[in-house]
Image (cartoon, rainbow, N blue to C red):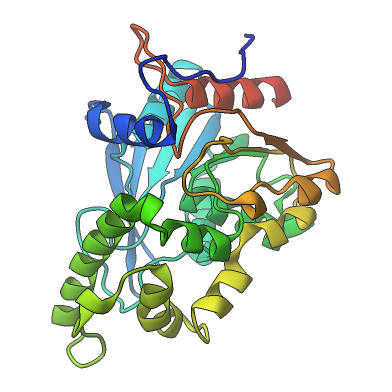
Length: 319
């Protein structure tokens, strides 16, 4: 299977349309999922959505910020990998499966212990000879951080990984999303995160509150107030520094493909880890001129997007 570099449809010019169109208009029936809930060691739970074709190969898919397994970029990849002979496991971050999680903590860009729990659970099933990872946006960053932390321990456990639209440098990406150019995305993220805060307030009165939430205008405000203290970071800057995947890429020991569109409205120059990839023969970076953020729209009768074909091709070539 050969695949040309991505080129957006002519009626989807510009980064915003390429980002927003698939989020609003691409629909995929997710009835093929089979949900399973597993417990975590801290008395919480993770909801896993399986799509099986009785394969010996499994792809584990991590979604983006305030996403879920139901998002079309996740379910589209799961469906296409099924068609190419892979089982798929789309897992939901804590609080993202349609039910708020039990603990005060939820998820963040470097919370690799939950991804590790999912991987270990799949491994212990004994059903798979090969396991690959896929991730989008925050899920891509999380996957890269996990692989960097694992280093040589990932060899023999994870065969390969492919990630898309990754904010490899969290600080500069957060600052870019805070600009007027990206106000539409920032307001949307903060709106959905506010809902989570309200649900946490009911579970943990006195430990978390939303007083003056309207004063939160960007991720620095949110991460300083919520993400950092809840998850053990000093502040937003400390969180961003410790969880930016570009610092972990040099330590990755398995084949990984990073695909970041050149016109991604969420990404800065620092999010294209050219230097980090150049020092690691296991890592590969592709920068299509177009694609937006988690976009890569294509129109065809199969309703398959370019990113899905690219992921399958990368894994097929390796494995």
